[in-house]
Image (cartoon, rainbow, N blue to C red):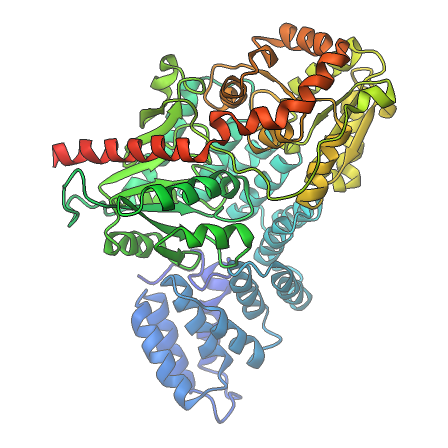
Length: 623
């Protein structure tokens, strides 16, 4: 269907059709200065008409025929790239060709930048977007895309300014509101972030990425009922279901004991907390469950690292899904005859939850990367444990809760030779509390709680380490927020992120780690314990709020779990006052962690395989 003049242009530029491809097509006919070796205005119009009619396969075929005759036509290369991208195919080469022949076309430069970003080449994408803006300074979508590229490079403050500039140029640009919301959340400005994400959804109600961002932000809020969060998640599920064509029959043979094909869907199958938790489990399953379970990864990424390479060795199949549209990925999964499909992302960034609405596999599960309901009715089960999700909270989920016997997580110890140092307080004479979690988790309630801890332990300091603290404006904001509660700058140590080895070594300057509320640490807490630093957590009621409870109970540290804010402060004071006991705990804490169910990959693998087999047996009995 041909878009209306005010609809977004299908070429992906983000501009309205009347200002983009329609304008180009209308201008092509009277233009007499086309190169003699290029296609005629009539041919260009025909190709553009096919594109805007949504006949993408015909566009691709026609464009390739035209390029055989006119290989230097930037216009045709650009249309080919747009049609490939909209079919879920790789468009990078086509846009590179288009940019070669149309170097001063802002839309082409922006399209090339988007294609490079799809491949994880964010620095090159940034250059393209900046070129597009030098050609066309009022190009709002290019500012939005530049913000995305900067955000992926960890340059959050710069990204925020790009989104704001985009909105000054085009206040109703949903993608700019969504990007600004995501960027502000990383700076800890959750309330303003939520306002922009909600505005994005008002402009574009089917904007699933923004909807996921909104649901993710709920996890950082102290306020908000479980009922309202569930209702919002259900709305997401209903929207993705309306756009899907769910499967109702599968070729999978309903044999309870046969070898199962397990699909893993995630953007984080690499050097990421999900990858760290998955690595040892997959390795154990590859040896234990050979002939019983086969793993197929659907990775929303285009680049490799040491963790992704280790994961890939444990999988029978590995598919990069970054350029696959939802329907195409669902069909790929169905063609691979996946029996149990596992979402590892939930509503975190770059998730593929809409694919699950197509129900490409008979059994669908969510696990590991998220701590609340997805709201997707086609996802059957959620993996949890008794500590993290008590029966009283089951009503907050659209999924059936399937509990693991001890823990829902199994940590892969870092493959780095970073030794545990002696308790720093013995040398400095003052206790250093620390938190290396993402700064988004440090809401105003957390600042108040930690300020109370610092006030109750004279001379103590707080060491914060997070990616956002590389930004001077963020550091100033943190100092001001604690200063409002009487905590001076001399009692705060603020550092940006660094290499994983350097990050782990920084724990040797921390005596006690403090968990944020209501979103405690997962990977950071496990790494803290591995470095000999105990973690003080506050047990909430929600699934997300009880990750620390599950970890500490499995490691045998219940005395580090507080029931409320008063007890949190009291336990911090008590632990800080007993340095000999703290030093003894530090000396043996790594071994204590490694000996716990939380790090016993073979044991966890057996429980995990049993859970998958149980889910499959249930489906077989119904089938």
